[in-house]
Amino acid sequence: MISNFLFFAPVIMGPGAVSVLEAKAKELAIKKAILVYDKGIEAAGITEKIRKPLVAAGVTLVEYNGVVPDPTDVTIDAAAKLARDNDVDAVIGVGGGSTMDTCKGVNLLMGNPGNIADYFIKPPVFPASKIGKKLILLPTTAGTGSECTISAVITDTANKRKAATRSPSHLATLAIIDPDLSSGMPPRLTASTGMDALAHAVESITILPSRWNVISEIFAIKAIQDLVKYLPIAVHDGKNLEAREKCAIASMLAGSAFANTLVHLGHAFGHSIGARLHMPHGECCGVTLAHAIDYVADAVPEKVKLVGETMGLTF
Image (tube, rainbow, N blue to C red; front, side):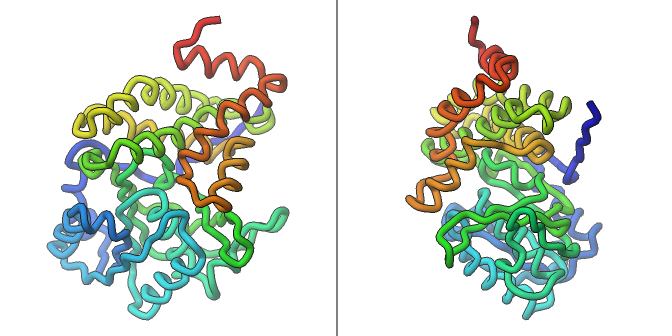
Protein backbone atom coordinates (compact mmCIF):
# COMPACT_ATOMS: atom_id res chain seq x y z
CA MET A 1 0.00 0.00 0.00
CA ILE A 2 1.27 3.45 -0.95
CA SER A 3 1.07 5.99 1.86
CA ASN A 4 2.24 9.52 2.47
CA PHE A 5 3.69 11.25 5.55
CA LEU A 6 4.36 14.95 5.96
CA PHE A 7 6.35 16.70 8.65
CA PHE A 8 4.44 19.91 9.22
CA ALA A 9 6.77 22.11 11.26
CA PRO A 10 10.41 22.51 12.29
CA VAL A 11 10.69 21.96 16.04
CA ILE A 12 13.17 23.04 18.69
CA MET A 13 12.59 21.19 21.95
CA GLY A 14 14.00 20.66 25.40
CA PRO A 15 14.32 22.44 28.74
CA GLY A 16 15.33 26.04 28.16
CA ALA A 17 14.43 25.95 24.46
CA VAL A 18 12.82 29.40 24.81
CA SER A 19 16.39 30.75 24.96
CA VAL A 20 16.61 30.44 21.16
CA LEU A 21 13.68 32.80 20.58
CA GLU A 22 15.70 36.01 20.39
CA ALA A 23 18.13 34.57 17.84
CA LYS A 24 15.32 33.00 15.80
CA ALA A 25 13.33 36.23 15.71
CA LYS A 26 16.40 37.99 14.33
CA GLU A 27 17.07 35.17 11.88
CA LEU A 28 13.49 35.38 10.59
CA ALA A 29 13.78 39.19 10.35
CA ILE A 30 10.61 39.74 12.38
CA LYS A 31 9.96 43.45 12.90
CA LYS A 32 6.43 43.58 14.28
CA ALA A 33 4.43 40.68 15.72
CA ILE A 34 1.13 40.02 17.42
CA LEU A 35 1.72 38.08 20.64
CA VAL A 36 -1.31 35.93 21.45
CA TYR A 37 -2.08 34.40 24.85
CA ASP A 38 -4.79 34.07 27.48
CA LYS A 39 -5.14 35.85 30.80
CA GLY A 40 -4.09 32.76 32.76
CA ILE A 41 -0.77 32.57 30.94
CA GLU A 42 -0.15 36.24 31.72
CA ALA A 43 -1.06 35.77 35.39
CA ALA A 44 1.36 32.84 35.63
CA GLY A 45 4.22 35.04 34.42
CA ILE A 46 4.80 32.97 31.29
CA THR A 47 4.11 35.76 28.82
CA GLU A 48 7.05 37.77 30.10
CA LYS A 49 9.37 34.84 29.31
CA ILE A 50 8.34 35.24 25.67
CA ARG A 51 8.03 39.01 25.58
CA LYS A 52 11.55 39.68 26.90
CA PRO A 53 13.58 37.88 24.17
CA LEU A 54 11.34 39.28 21.44
CA VAL A 55 11.86 42.84 22.63
CA ALA A 56 15.59 42.12 22.89
CA ALA A 57 15.47 41.06 19.24
CA GLY A 58 14.02 44.43 18.30
CA VAL A 59 10.49 43.15 17.66
CA THR A 60 7.63 45.61 18.18
CA LEU A 61 4.81 43.74 19.91
CA VAL A 62 1.08 44.10 19.58
CA GLU A 63 -0.60 41.93 22.21
CA TYR A 64 -3.89 40.05 22.30
CA ASN A 65 -4.88 38.38 25.56
CA GLY A 66 -8.47 37.42 24.70
CA VAL A 67 -7.96 33.73 23.94
CA VAL A 68 -10.79 31.60 25.36
CA PRO A 69 -11.17 27.83 25.78
CA ASP A 70 -12.52 26.23 22.60
CA PRO A 71 -11.54 29.33 20.61
CA THR A 72 -14.42 31.00 18.83
CA ASP A 73 -14.77 32.60 15.44
CA VAL A 74 -15.57 35.85 17.27
CA THR A 75 -12.30 35.98 19.21
CA ILE A 76 -10.24 34.95 16.20
CA ASP A 77 -11.81 37.65 14.03
CA ALA A 78 -11.07 40.21 16.78
CA ALA A 79 -7.44 39.16 17.09
CA ALA A 80 -7.04 39.14 13.31
CA LYS A 81 -8.43 42.68 13.08
CA LEU A 82 -5.83 43.83 15.60
CA ALA A 83 -3.09 42.08 13.61
CA ARG A 84 -4.30 43.50 10.28
CA ASP A 85 -4.71 47.03 11.65
CA ASN A 86 -1.12 46.94 12.90
CA ASP A 87 0.27 45.29 9.75
CA VAL A 88 2.27 42.68 11.66
CA ASP A 89 4.70 40.39 9.89
CA ALA A 90 4.47 37.53 12.41
CA VAL A 91 1.97 35.76 14.65
CA ILE A 92 3.43 34.37 17.89
CA GLY A 93 1.42 32.33 20.35
CA VAL A 94 2.16 30.99 23.82
CA GLY A 95 -0.37 28.80 25.58
CA GLY A 96 -2.45 25.68 25.23
CA GLY A 97 -4.24 24.23 22.23
CA SER A 98 -6.81 27.03 22.22
CA THR A 99 -4.03 29.58 21.77
CA MET A 100 -2.35 27.51 19.08
CA ASP A 101 -5.60 27.29 17.10
CA THR A 102 -6.36 30.97 17.65
CA CYS A 103 -2.97 31.84 16.17
CA LYS A 104 -3.57 29.58 13.21
CA GLY A 105 -6.88 31.28 12.56
CA VAL A 106 -5.30 34.72 12.84
CA ASN A 107 -2.50 33.74 10.48
CA LEU A 108 -4.99 32.44 7.92
CA LEU A 109 -6.71 35.83 7.94
CA MET A 110 -3.36 37.60 7.58
CA GLY A 111 -3.03 36.09 4.13
CA ASN A 112 -6.67 35.93 3.10
CA PRO A 113 -9.73 38.23 3.07
CA GLY A 114 -12.93 37.90 5.06
CA ASN A 115 -13.67 36.27 8.39
CA ILE A 116 -12.57 32.90 9.73
CA ALA A 117 -16.04 31.39 9.20
CA ASP A 118 -15.50 31.83 5.46
CA TYR A 119 -12.85 29.11 5.69
CA PHE A 120 -14.68 26.47 7.72
CA ILE A 121 -14.48 23.07 6.08
CA LYS A 122 -17.86 21.87 4.86
CA PRO A 123 -17.16 18.45 3.28
CA PRO A 124 -16.64 17.92 0.46
CA VAL A 125 -15.68 21.60 0.22
CA PHE A 126 -12.26 22.58 1.58
CA PRO A 127 -12.00 26.35 1.02
CA ALA A 128 -8.76 27.35 -0.64
CA SER A 129 -6.47 29.76 1.18
CA LYS A 130 -3.03 31.27 0.81
CA ILE A 131 -0.10 31.25 3.20
CA GLY A 132 -0.10 33.92 5.91
CA LYS A 133 2.76 35.52 7.84
CA LYS A 134 5.53 33.93 9.90
CA LEU A 135 4.03 31.77 12.66
CA ILE A 136 5.83 30.81 15.88
CA LEU A 137 4.04 28.56 18.36
CA LEU A 138 5.12 27.84 21.93
CA PRO A 139 2.83 25.30 23.64
CA THR A 140 2.45 25.33 27.40
CA THR A 141 0.35 22.15 27.59
CA ALA A 142 1.06 18.62 26.40
CA GLY A 143 -2.11 17.59 24.65
CA THR A 144 -3.21 18.88 21.28
CA GLY A 145 0.06 18.78 19.36
CA SER A 146 -1.47 21.69 17.45
CA GLU A 147 1.93 23.33 17.05
CA CYS A 148 2.74 20.61 14.50
CA THR A 149 -0.51 20.18 12.55
CA ILE A 150 -2.07 21.83 9.51
CA SER A 151 -5.59 22.09 10.96
CA ALA A 152 -7.37 24.17 13.58
CA VAL A 153 -10.57 23.50 15.51
CA ILE A 154 -12.75 26.56 16.06
CA THR A 155 -16.14 27.06 17.70
CA ASP A 156 -18.75 28.14 15.16
CA THR A 157 -20.83 30.39 17.42
CA ALA A 158 -23.69 30.83 14.96
CA ASN A 159 -24.33 27.10 14.77
CA LYS A 160 -23.04 26.07 18.22
CA ARG A 161 -20.66 23.46 16.85
CA LYS A 162 -16.99 22.74 16.44
CA ALA A 163 -15.73 23.61 12.97
CA ALA A 164 -12.35 23.04 11.35
CA THR A 165 -10.01 24.90 9.05
CA ARG A 166 -7.11 23.49 7.08
CA SER A 167 -4.65 25.82 5.43
CA PRO A 168 -0.98 26.25 4.52
CA SER A 169 -1.15 29.32 6.77
CA HIS A 170 -1.52 26.92 9.72
CA LEU A 171 1.97 25.51 9.21
CA ALA A 172 4.23 26.87 11.90
CA THR A 173 7.41 28.57 10.75
CA LEU A 174 8.83 27.31 14.04
CA ALA A 175 7.52 25.38 17.04
CA ILE A 176 9.39 25.71 20.32
CA ILE A 177 8.56 23.01 22.86
CA ASP A 178 10.00 23.92 26.25
CA PRO A 179 8.79 21.84 29.22
CA ASP A 180 9.73 24.69 31.55
CA LEU A 181 6.66 26.53 30.22
CA SER A 182 4.35 23.79 31.51
CA SER A 183 5.90 23.28 34.95
CA GLY A 184 3.14 25.21 36.70
CA MET A 185 0.24 23.49 34.96
CA PRO A 186 -2.30 22.21 37.54
CA PRO A 187 -2.93 18.45 37.92
CA ARG A 188 -6.39 18.38 36.33
CA LEU A 189 -5.25 20.31 33.25
CA THR A 190 -2.18 18.08 32.98
CA ALA A 191 -4.38 14.98 33.05
CA SER A 192 -6.96 16.40 30.66
CA THR A 193 -4.47 17.51 28.02
CA GLY A 194 -2.57 14.25 28.39
CA MET A 195 -5.75 12.31 27.64
CA ASP A 196 -6.17 14.32 24.45
CA ALA A 197 -2.66 13.32 23.35
CA LEU A 198 -3.39 9.69 24.23
CA ALA A 199 -6.61 9.78 22.22
CA HIS A 200 -4.74 11.22 19.22
CA ALA A 201 -2.23 8.39 19.33
CA VAL A 202 -4.76 5.59 19.89
CA GLU A 203 -7.19 6.81 17.25
CA SER A 204 -4.34 7.31 14.80
CA ILE A 205 -3.36 3.64 15.14
CA THR A 206 -6.94 2.35 14.94
CA ILE A 207 -7.99 4.40 11.93
CA LEU A 208 -9.40 2.60 8.90
CA PRO A 209 -6.74 0.76 6.84
CA SER A 210 -7.13 3.20 3.94
CA ARG A 211 -5.70 5.96 6.18
CA TRP A 212 -3.04 3.88 7.96
CA ASN A 213 0.54 5.12 7.84
CA VAL A 214 3.61 3.28 9.11
CA ILE A 215 5.41 6.42 10.34
CA SER A 216 2.30 7.64 12.10
CA GLU A 217 2.06 4.29 13.84
CA ILE A 218 5.68 4.46 15.00
CA PHE A 219 5.10 7.99 16.35
CA ALA A 220 1.84 6.96 18.02
CA ILE A 221 3.34 3.90 19.69
CA LYS A 222 6.13 5.99 21.21
CA ALA A 223 3.60 8.59 22.34
CA ILE A 224 1.45 5.96 24.08
CA GLN A 225 4.44 4.36 25.77
CA ASP A 226 5.65 7.66 27.20
CA LEU A 227 2.21 8.90 28.21
CA VAL A 228 1.46 5.67 30.08
CA LYS A 229 4.77 5.97 31.93
CA TYR A 230 5.16 9.71 32.47
CA LEU A 231 1.68 11.27 32.50
CA PRO A 232 0.85 9.96 36.01
CA ILE A 233 4.16 11.37 37.24
CA ALA A 234 3.47 14.77 35.66
CA VAL A 235 -0.02 14.83 37.20
CA HIS A 236 1.25 14.07 40.71
CA ASP A 237 4.49 16.08 40.50
CA GLY A 238 4.09 19.04 38.19
CA LYS A 239 7.68 20.15 38.76
CA ASN A 240 9.15 16.88 37.46
CA LEU A 241 10.87 18.26 34.37
CA GLU A 242 11.65 14.85 32.86
CA ALA A 243 7.98 13.86 32.98
CA ARG A 244 6.92 17.22 31.57
CA GLU A 245 9.39 16.89 28.69
CA LYS A 246 8.36 13.32 27.87
CA CYS A 247 4.69 14.31 27.83
CA ALA A 248 5.39 17.37 25.67
CA ILE A 249 7.26 15.29 23.11
CA ALA A 250 4.55 12.62 23.22
CA SER A 251 1.96 15.28 22.47
CA MET A 252 3.96 16.48 19.48
CA LEU A 253 4.45 12.92 18.20
CA ALA A 254 0.77 12.08 18.60
CA GLY A 255 -0.20 15.31 16.85
CA SER A 256 2.11 14.56 13.94
CA ALA A 257 0.72 11.02 13.80
CA PHE A 258 -2.96 11.94 13.54
CA ALA A 259 -2.24 14.88 11.23
CA ASN A 260 -1.26 12.27 8.66
CA THR A 261 -4.01 9.73 9.37
CA LEU A 262 -6.92 11.53 11.08
CA VAL A 263 -8.72 10.64 14.30
CA HIS A 264 -12.14 9.00 14.38
CA LEU A 265 -15.20 8.36 16.57
CA GLY A 266 -13.72 9.36 19.92
CA HIS A 267 -12.90 12.84 18.70
CA ALA A 268 -16.16 13.14 16.77
CA PHE A 269 -18.06 12.46 19.99
CA GLY A 270 -15.64 14.58 22.01
CA HIS A 271 -16.05 17.65 19.81
CA SER A 272 -19.84 17.32 19.90
CA ILE A 273 -19.91 17.03 23.69
CA GLY A 274 -17.49 19.91 24.11
CA ALA A 275 -19.45 22.20 21.81
CA ARG A 276 -22.69 21.55 23.71
CA LEU A 277 -21.52 21.26 27.31
CA HIS A 278 -18.31 23.33 27.18
CA MET A 279 -16.31 20.61 28.91
CA PRO A 280 -12.51 20.57 28.50
CA HIS A 281 -11.66 18.87 25.22
CA GLY A 282 -9.24 16.38 26.75
CA GLU A 283 -11.84 15.24 29.26
CA CYS A 284 -14.40 14.74 26.50
CA CYS A 285 -11.93 12.64 24.51
CA GLY A 286 -10.91 10.66 27.59
CA VAL A 287 -14.52 9.79 28.36
CA THR A 288 -15.33 8.70 24.81
CA LEU A 289 -12.08 6.91 23.92
CA ALA A 290 -12.86 3.51 25.44
CA HIS A 291 -16.30 3.42 23.78
CA ALA A 292 -14.83 4.38 20.41
CA ILE A 293 -12.17 1.69 20.57
CA ASP A 294 -14.72 -0.92 21.64
CA TYR A 295 -16.78 0.00 18.58
CA VAL A 296 -13.92 -0.18 16.05
CA ALA A 297 -12.40 -3.37 17.50
CA ASP A 298 -14.34 -5.58 15.09
CA ALA A 299 -13.01 -3.61 12.12
CA VAL A 300 -9.34 -3.39 13.18
CA PRO A 301 -8.80 -6.05 15.87
CA GLU A 302 -5.03 -6.33 15.37
CA LYS A 303 -4.59 -2.57 15.77
CA VAL A 304 -6.66 -2.54 18.95
CA LYS A 305 -4.53 -5.40 20.26
CA LEU A 306 -1.40 -3.41 19.36
CA VAL A 307 -2.69 -0.45 21.39
CA GLY A 308 -3.29 -2.73 24.38
CA GLU A 309 0.15 -4.30 24.13
CA THR A 310 1.74 -0.87 23.85
CA MET A 311 -0.01 0.11 27.07
CA GLY A 312 1.44 -2.95 28.77
CA LEU A 313 -1.63 -5.18 28.69
CA THR A 314 -1.35 -8.93 28.17
CA PHE A 315 -3.78 -11.11 26.24
